[in-house]
Amino acid sequence: MIRNVLIAGLVALLGVAFWTLAAGYVPDAELNRTAAYYAANAQTDVGAPNIVTGIIVTWRGLDTLGEVTVLFLTSAIIALVLAQSKTPPGASGAGFLPSGELLTTGSRMLLPLITLLGAYVIMNGHLTPGGGFQGGAILASGVLLMLLADPSHRFAHSVIARVESISGLAYVLVGLAGMALAGGFLDNGILPLGRFGAMLSAGAIPLISVLIGLKVGAEFSSILESLEETEDA
Amino acid sequence: MAQIALATGFVLILAGIYGALTNRDILRMIVAFTIADTGVNVVLVAVGFLPGRTAPILDAAVPVAQAAERIIDPVPQALVLTAIVIGLGITALMLAYAYRLFRLRGSLDISNFTELKW
Image 1: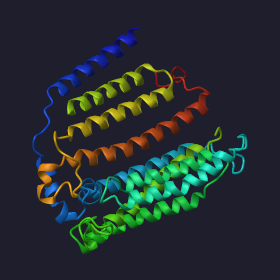
Image 2: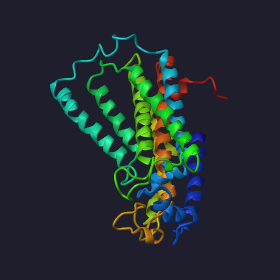
Image 3: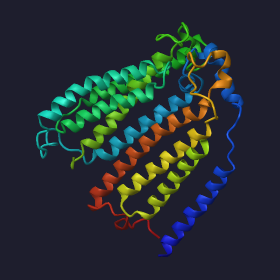
Image 4: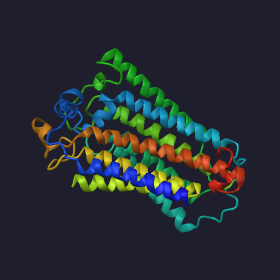
């Protein structure tokens, strides 16, 4: 009883704090200086029509590298935590009924389309909403569909691990190439900026997007796999 | 418009925190945390919204020369993209720990885990 009252009081206090924030909120009429700089220099600096991708991949590219590292740590910790309760190979999924014709055929039909959409979102990240993270998540959703449609199926861990480490290494190498050939770490000027708005433009952004997409897709896939390959699954 | 989104985000945060504090089941707590996470993202995106402007993508609708007058703030959107991905990682981590706890006690009720209770 006391506990519930305390919790309700705490949430009410937090609600009052939020209320003062929301009631006194006036949207800016002008962009702040950082955003105005990004808006004015998107074409000349990074050559990417999608300013958000320009920020993520180039202007704040170091943060993105850190974020990908955090994701890698997450997937590694999950694999470590769940490693003790892993099923011996071949034993998992034995308790499941067969998936059935409809589910199997449907997932086989959908999987290439999902992969295609993921590749499209990754490659157009600098032109339209999208990019490496979103496309990588879509790729991993294809893996999730495969895991759900056929629980006894096993993926090749080594392939996923290799895709992940190679794309991560290449990402860092592209960043170092930016230091040697262009303005700094992860500068996209190592490749020509090209025509503004074209598919292969904006310097190294499409390349970095592909690497991020592969890495994020592989990390999410390995998380899903670790969760799926536990003893009770 | 921005106020509605802001209020929705704050309500989601409050609902998530309330749910995480009152529920005894670990899975429900994880769901509550993801709801609070979504609320934070909604608030962040709402703060970047400027009335009467469009998405920060330079195309036929937004000429480069007028970009600074026509687009909303792109920085919160980039931040939220990061926050969503990290939020997913945190959710996966919580689920993995919940699984280990379930293997330990055969139950997901938080009352059964008293080692750290004072």
